[in-house]
Structures are given as C-alpha cells and as structure tokens.
Length: 492
Image (cartoon, rainbow, N blue to C red):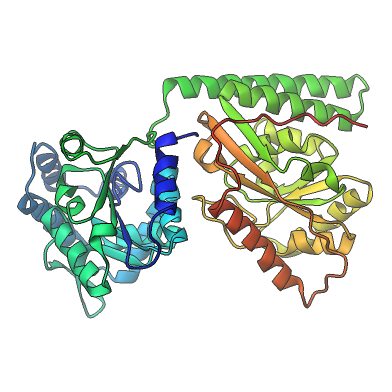
C-alpha cells in the first residue's frame, strides 16, 4: 500500500548520517505492533479460565485511569510479575514465542518494519525501548534482527523469576532514563537519533532524541506533537478487518468459485485440461484480485518469459501468493505445495487440476518421491514454481531456504528464476482468509544458469540466491507509488 509520508520519512533517513552513533529507538506496543502484546497473554488466561476476579479488577482499575502515573503503572506491573514468580526464563521465552506466532505476529505494522530496515541499512544502532519485559519483546526483536532491548527487567534468582522487578519500569520518565543511559554507554549522539512511539507516557522518551516521530499517536501525544511540530505517521489498523474489506473478500472468493466451476464444466465438456486450468487461473486471479482491491506491480516482467521451462523461486508469506502467482505466471506452469493444501476449499480442487505436486513435509521419503514427477513436468516443457522456504512466514522476514528446488533445477538442467514478492503477508496474513486492499510488488530477477553446478558448490549457490532475495527486499528497485497491472502474455 502506498504511504507517501512514510516513504518521504524513509528517504530522509537514507539521505541522513550513517553509522552506529546514530540510534533509532522503537516503542513496542502500539508502535511496532497494533495494540498491546500483554492482551495476548491475558486473553489466553481468560479463555483457559485461569484469570481470577482480583486480576480482572487490577486491569480494569488501571484501564479506567484517565491519566495514569508511573507509580500506577509500576503497581500494575508488580501485580503481574508476582504471578510469574517461580517460572524460569526459558519458560517465559517459550511462552512469548508461542504467543507471538499465534496472536501477535498478525498485528505487526509492515510500515514500522520498513522503518527498522531503513535504519539498519544506514548502520544505525536500533533498539526497542518498551515498558514490557524482555520476554514479551524478544520474539519481535529476533524477527527484525534487533539486538538491543531496553525493557522493564524482571528479577531472576537461581534461574527463576522472583516476582519482583530490577530498578524502575521502562515507562514514562523511566523509559527516558534507560534510553539516556544506553546512549551514554554506547557514545550515541541523541541529538541526531530517532525515536518512535504512540502514547502520552512516551513524551518524556521522545524528548530525549533530536528526531522524534509519533506513530498512530493517542490524543495527548498527538496534541503535543502538533505543539512541537513533530512529524506524525498514521498506519492502517492491523487488529481488525473492516466490514468493507470482508465484503470485498467474500465477493472475490465467490467470483473465484464461479470461475472454478466454469473451468471444470469446460473440461467436462471435452475442453483440454491444461486450457481449463489456464482459464481458471487467469480469469479468477485477474478479476478476483480486482474485486478485493489488490493491484499487482511487476518489475522485470520480461524475465518471466526469457527462459522457459524454468524453476521459479518465490518467497512465501501467505495464501495470497497462490492467487498472485496465477496472475503473473499465466500459463505452462505448475507448482509444489504441502499436502494439506489439497484440502483447501476451492483452491485445493484447482491445485489438483493443475497437477500440483503435494508433499508430506513430515515424511522426507515421501517428499523425495514427489519431486520425481516435478522433473518429468520440466522435461515436458512446464515450468515449476517452488517456495524454497517450505512454509509461509509469520512476518516479512525471509526464512531459510531448503535445497529441493535447487536440486531439481540442477538435475533437470533448467535455469532458476528468483521472483521476489513484497506485501502479500500484509495484504493477507498467513493464518487468515481475509484479503486487505493494497498493492503487491513483484520483482522478477534475471534467470540463473544451473548447468555446471555440482553438489559441492550447491550450498554456496543457494546462499548467493537467498542473498539476492534479501537485497531486493531491503533495497526495492522501484518504490514509485503508481501501480502497473500485470500484462497478459499471449501465446506465440
């Protein structure tokens, strides 16, 4: 989705000073993610009926305070910490990693992710400054590659939490203090450094840096930002899907289902199966994406047709990749998917018609057997689309690459063509079916010859190609806001 104010701020970052003496401090709740991470924990306790009346009263009492003080917040934190007494740090880290995957990852602001990447690109010292505990923030920091966590510190004795905190909470003036202390220890120039936050309690923290920015600010912070002429960025809410978006998604799926039925009828009446698959894929994706309000912008489109058959490599973020793939690859291709995808309503039937190779990821021998027919399809002139990560990612972070796709291309003697996809995860998160409107960016990189590859050199080739994906995602070749729809490739 185009966000001119965000792109302007990123351009200012990239044209500014480089180096580790410039820092970027990001608040967590409400800034890197939409909402409050602790709600995932409290929601789980409530659903499991482990939340007592006293705990509910504490939370309700704090939430009703119009202008809570640092003392009020510390009292709430101390009450929560006492319930964690006796747990080990490993238990706490495992708990919050699980909550991140199941609840929190879907609320990550992709715009904030872009800000972090811009600062990392400039070699800045990037830190999360949060009143939450390190255990809550760590999974997000691991995804973003952030090493510095300035958080409320739980007291640990003999490997277990005592139920107390060390020092003061990183809230209000406490957060400002921990930022100043960190900057002094790292010889960071705060006057040239950046701060990002959303709440009234963050005003003291934002006042410590020379370049404060309010993200989705609460009323008090928004007013202060106007008075101080601080820049403000508003990001689209991630926690809720609008009624309009739900209606468009249902309409898009309805169109795709009708197209699938029409294609199956065409085949049943004697039409060629491959032609039926192409009709379903092209018409369903073109119109379905338009109904959902999703544009596809392609760079390097000529590389889609330069060398076929080929093994196309895509990064995998959501189920939307399948629809986008049908739109951009158009014809004479098939793919590989996990066996569970064959049961997906509508799409599963289409993938079966398209001769997708379904792989049991839990059974390595079955997976190897499934790759044999893939090589046969390449020999017949069909290209193959494979996600080398093997599964959808929880965030925009690129996962590790598996070797299967590279073995196939090397043994079949066909080129590999990297297809880097950006934004499908933010349009449709991996564990949802709702499609948000916006623009999906696709960069098709030049074909990579595999003839002459050996098993000994395979790992280095994989590393080089994965780096191409990382470089493209970090330094997108064209950020012009005007989308260009995919061109239909006619048969010669």
